Image 1 (cartoon, rainbow, N blue to C red):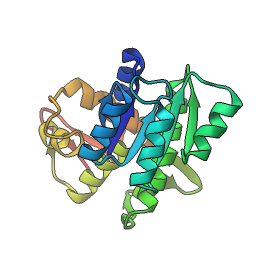
Image 2 (image 1 turned 180 degrees about the horizontal axis):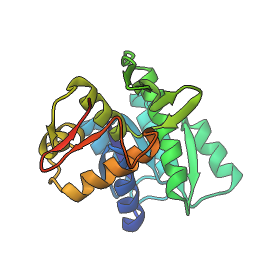
Image 3 (image 1 turned 180 degrees about the vertical axis):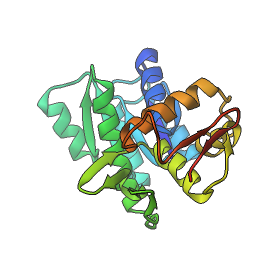
Length: 224
């Protein structure tokens, strides 16, 4: 899933890109309003994150033009302009949400996942599936075990879908990277192992003795 980030501050722009990449998205970034519109036309992103104060054209102007071209694409304003009027103007222009700087990573992740669920809800429903006693709901970015609900990232879902599609097969780290990070991502075993460790903490009954994601030493991971 591709996300356009339009933000003139390089630190905020890079920070947002890193948050989105960690969640499993493909960010494309713009520094100015005109560049954002050009990238929107060329890249056809699934949703958009907009700053308000940008060179060339404001986020309000960009939002207005994007809405003219595509009435349904989700748009989130991320701005230091925190007055109620700023939020009202943004929402009246058709934005789906408004995040005030400075923001926390957890807040951004939660709001991005909420937007993603709306995007997925508009697409053909992805089939639910089970891994052991865990039910995976891809369209909701969630898993369930009994009455317990577990939030998942887009990348978590990709990993679990890959394991489910290859039961009993030892999947190499390269195969997992290619399927869940993309061919352009430079493989790093530590990145994958850390992600699996964090995923296990949320989905395994006992992360130290996993029943869903098994380690295949020297190779990668497997679901039995």
